[in-house]
Every structure is written in structure tokens, then in C-alpha cells.
Length: 252
Image 1 (cartoon, rainbow, N blue to C red):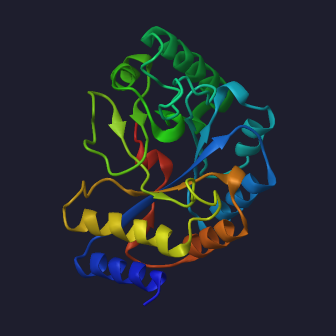
Image 2 (cartoon, rainbow, N blue to C red; image 1 turned 30 degrees about the vertical axis):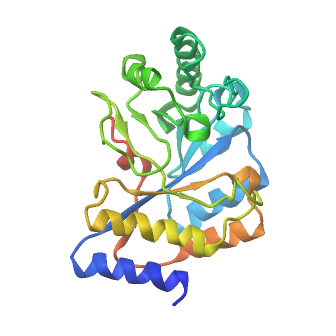
């Protein structure tokens, strides 16, 4: 069986149980309109797969809000502040860190929140996507008081609400081989991760209510990555439902 066959078999199991496998799509590191981003916006339009675009506030260019205003379903999340690493040598990269004073991190996030709200209006959802999917616990604890309602990192969530008023919805399928070629991770790895999370949800090994998240980074996509996404988003199965982003992070 191919990896696509394994995915269809897993979705068949959901269907046989009368259940719908929910999924969502997040793309990181947006600051301006590029041909690679236009490709993703084309997928969203053609296949009706809504896109959550994690935007870096400090580097935002004027053309991005203007372009997204033309789309139907694209929503914007806040990708930290400047995607700058503050960790000392030897520690994994992190912007929302535990090295600086918490007040400094909070100030960055507050600046970003004001900018994103101003530039994107109701297309912006007050959800933090930590750069490198890493964030200090005390930063997470402060998010709701700043006005954020959600957070999104990577891997199956431990709790839907890590703190009162804050919803966590993660991604689970990274299409990029960051530790190797830095190109497409391959169909077997990508679809294997998707099937693994879907199966774990179906059998209760992880939170069954957390939608399975696809994570992309348009700035580093190669031809194989683009082809895979085209095939994935065009695949039709009655047990698979790609969620609109306000449905992933309902806050109004």
C-alpha cells in the first residue's frame, strides 16, 4: 500500500465509526507577498482549504494586508514579534524566551498585537504562534492578560486550555525536513505523521478534539513540497473536513 492508501484507510475507519476527521492548515513566516505565497493562496481558493497565516509583525510589509483583503478565508495569526533568537549558544532557538525579563517579552508581544490588529482588522485572530514552536511557560501564562485567546505550537497538545481563557491548537505534520535536506520531508514521512495523529485521536491516545494540523513554510518550499500540498488539498474523502480558521480558534 502507498502512503496515500494508508491515509484513505485511516479516514475509512473514521467514516465507519460515523466520525469526521477535522484538519487545519498553518503556514509560518509571512511578511510580504511572494510567488510562493501566491501558490498557497491559489490552493486555498481552488480547493477551499482555509489558511492560517502566521505573520511576523516587526517585518510586515504593506502589500500583505492589501493582498489578504482580497481572499475569502485567509486568517492571520501573530508569529512572535521579530522572529529573533534570544537564547545563548548551545540552547535551542527561541524568541519567547526565559532568558530576558518577562516584561521585555510581554512588551514585544503587546507591540505585535497592536500592529496586527491595526493592519489586518477582523482577519487577525489574537493567537500566538511562537517562532520555532518554542515558548517559555511564564510567557504562556501571561498571554490571556495581554488579550490573546490562543496559542499554536507543534505536536499533540497536553491540554486544550493550558491556562484559563487560552485555547491551544497545535500542528502535527511538518512538510519540511529541517534537520536534513531542508526541502520536502517526503510523502511517507508527511503522510505517516498525518495518519499517526489521526489514528491516535481516533483511539483516544491523544485529545480527539484537537484537529490535525498541517504546518508549511512557503519561503522554503521546493517543487516536491508544492506537488505534495496540491495532491493533499485536492484529495476528496467524505470523512475529512478542513476547518475554517475561526472554527479552529473561536473567540467572538
